[in-house]
Length: 356
Image (cartoon, rainbow, N blue to C red; front, top):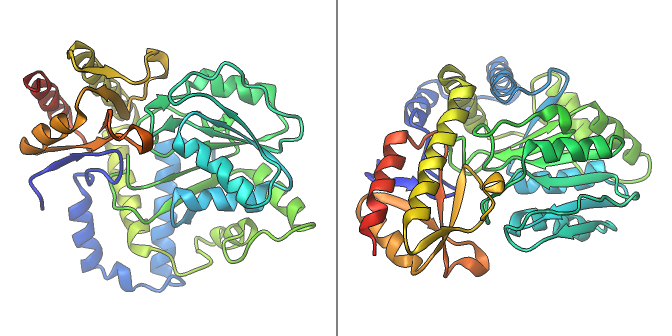
């Protein structure tokens, strides 16, 4: 494997047990298993059980597997929205969910603030059936606090709440009791290659899908009723990415052994020393200035000459990310996921003052 350590916001560094589990999966012929076999049923059941324990998913919620978080946008709109959704966006990824809704012909609405800015108005139009939120905006390093999500839930008890957990879970504490459907992909905080998405739904989602099916198509093989029908048997509608489902279960199991609270605490510690080092550097500053909204997992930094920071750290074996979109020329992005040890982050912090 490479001697570089990837602190890029995704794909990012592989989880430290990934190689071991990958080799074991090959030994067990996991990629050749039939997705209707007892062995696969056992693998899927194990992965779902581990994810539910690690992420504290309420017992009555279902966990399904997709190709990516992007696909979840399609499936949510296809299955859970008849006419209109409302989206809160302050960066590229939260805005894309809204764009997907429009592409599906919905009369959706948007509350948009400047990149990284704080939402001052959480008013949701009455016609909105579903609210789209992003827990951690990866492009801008912005996190919505749990208290604001809870307040939004209380103010809109009859609307579905959809939460993007990409780059947030399992590093941040998230109360899924306030959420009806949530989703993430595995190439960030779970330390896997891209190619698998996870979609979590509760009973309200199944009821809405049934209602929509009376007036419109829900899509094809990955419609929510079909996912539910086969998911109840620990199966999938299509031949899935069996290898990644197996690996995700094993990594989730490893994270359970580490302890969810330790992962959260370590994330806080590492992000704290990162922000302190950034604020101390004359040519760096946090893009999100209010500490209550600063991401702890994807630290986005204003940089005077980002390329020199990227190049210098790469020479030291640390690969960080460039800015996203229009901010490519003035931002750097540093990932802080469970696979990034305290020692690695401390080493990066020690290198920063050397860069002038």
